[in-house]
Image (cartoon, rainbow, N blue to C red):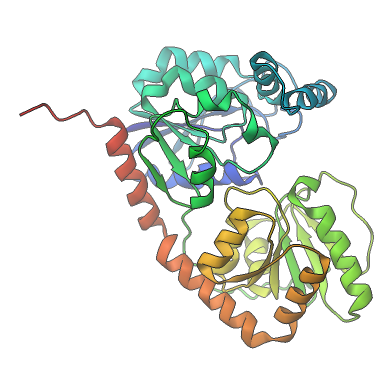
Amino acid sequence: MKLACVVHRFGADIAGGSEAHCRHVATHLAERHRVTILTSCAKDHITWRNEHEPGTSTLGPLSVLRFASARERSLHRFAEVSEQAFSGTASDDVQEEWFRENGPNLPGLLEHLRVHGHEYDAVLFWAFRYAEVYFGLPLVQDRSILVPTAEEDPVIRMSILDRFFACPAGYIFLTPEEQELVERRMSTVPPPSCIIGSGLDPAPPDRGQDLSSRGVRAPFILYLGRIDPNKGCADLLAHFVRYKAEHPGPVQLVMAGPSSMPLPTHPDIQYLGFVDEETREALLRQAMLLAMPSRYESLSLVLLEAWNHSLPAVVNGHCAVLKGQARRANGALYYRNYDEFARCVSVLLERRDVARTLGEQGLAYVEREYRWPIVVRKIDALLEKVIAPPHPPR
């Protein structure tokens, strides 16, 4: 099959969850299909500044076709439109303006879909909230598959999405909670779909990397991903600082990922910034537990990666997706306030038997559900349903 994957940013150095999910899925689909990535020239999801050259390049088995953004995002205008769009009384025009201001603004990509979209057997779109998906998917809706990466946040409540969510010919969901969230918004009978989460290869062998040169010391709690208030990082930092004041001891908080917020100075908090794959693996292997504080997730890839290393976790219990993942795997504890956070952390740090059991149960869950052959089979079955011609009547 000839497939296109549409995503707002693309590259091995992009830290975003949906971008990484697209890259991993596309790479494995390319083992059986011809796959082209349709994306922007941006590295930064805040400004959409053009940093890559437009045109065609390759990344492993993937052909990558980049389109320049017509303009950078105006954060002032975006804030104004967001306030109007999320008011609950916004017109369709105002809500559509939100998608334009959210960006990226890629007229060349939309024109490519308009002119060449029919040349692909299927077009997969990642993350409904971005402009190239909202405006691009209806151009090829008869062969479109949406990976919505939907979260229980203000965007999902926009009234114009009832119409949009009725467009795709198929859906790839990341969790049952996400499927339920989106299907409640559909104005038609739900089309074919599958729930895949994300595929994982077995964790590589331990290379014995010494992290002390990066200021990391055992024991430590790990946060891995974008350091952003929207990811619950401000709450995590406040919880940890209070925890250390009430529970003196050697435990450290290590945060690895690009930051978009002020970072407090604390002797037991270490910020590493963006880390390479080898360091990432070492952090997951050597941590005592993973902290996942986000309220809004469609799937936590990092949580699956932690379980792939038999690493237990504490997750935000206000997030239905994280709570659902924790309960299905029986591999994490969840909290809803500081007191519960403190009890969860203390249990996992002090009761290593409990921590070990949770980590082992998380790994067993990954083995059952998230190895790549299992995931790819589900996607291929969906592709056959979406693009296969109907059987002629007998």
